[in-house]
Image (cartoon, rainbow, N blue to C red; front, top):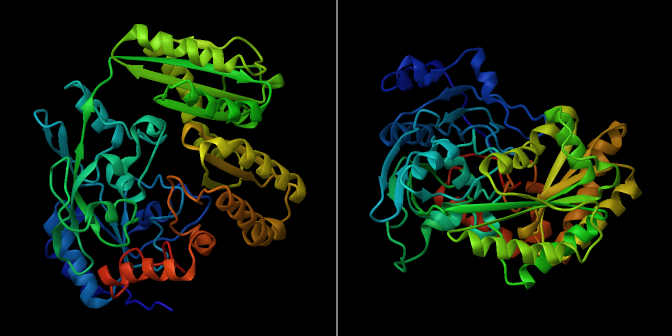
Length: 468
């Protein structure tokens, strides 16, 4: 059992020695930092500190380390695994004031930012230079790049370009004891020792606090085309996904939404995009590049793949930015649409994409067995299916006991049997930690725990996450 020191007046006096009034929160605003987008979990910190530079982060961590005070890094609070929940109280370390784009190096196609920079703000800024930063979670308009790094976030364009880890060159990190380190170098190649940079990517704030991030950029594609196709069967839509790659095309985005997801999204936006009565699922397929003729040829091949299956109507091709954004709006709102209208549990499953139909069929089968509705959508090109289990009229015992102890383990065990894993981009955090033994044996888990203890022997940094 972890035991920690409660915040007292002497601790508060110390923080006021180097932090201004606006950087310290002790009043009712603490409630704003008690939750993220994960279900209805609520754990307020005892104090929120908002550092403005690396040195302040270092002082906070050094003091907390010496006094055995838990510290939970907090980003934009858009996470879906409870990674920022202050489950042991203590210090909520908000990174929102460290929000500067420090450098855009156009000569080397890289940039250095602080962790509190909003992802879309950064993307828009580098686009002014004809550059592109592809990682784009659905919450890109509000999430922080630091949180993206901590969770190894993906997004719509990961199928072609990769997840956040594929764009991180170097990190400045403050360790739990206050020491400041660089994890790598600002180079495209680095075979110098262990890869500390990638160790911190996806570590969910449990090993250190990231204070500077150097990312690589690529040239901004000149053109994009987007196709929307409605399938009579959701399983046909899943099978079409892998066949697109068989015609030697790698889409820049390939998204799946079953009928229920479309209904949730249209209700949330208060707009009818499609009559979903006969629709089993919808695929959104995007291609990008610098030669428009080539992209149209790619879309012709994709259209031929779609026509191998029973479509509800003719696919729609969007060839302008405005038309494309209108289509993407529905897909991007689905997380908020489900959360805003119902009680739910979301699982972030990922399997080899050719097994996507198998996973979907199993989820629907087990839903019938236990009497729950599931709303499924996700990054089909990655095999990443977001499974939202809807409470509806399920009794409390089934919801709070049977689902966590029987249903979700069965889904995760099946995912593993397909060669998949239990999180593709949301992380483990607070809500999935009990399922880690499904995907790791005892020796593997112990190795991960040993790494945590090596960096944080006093277990003060984001305690209660990943492991139980």
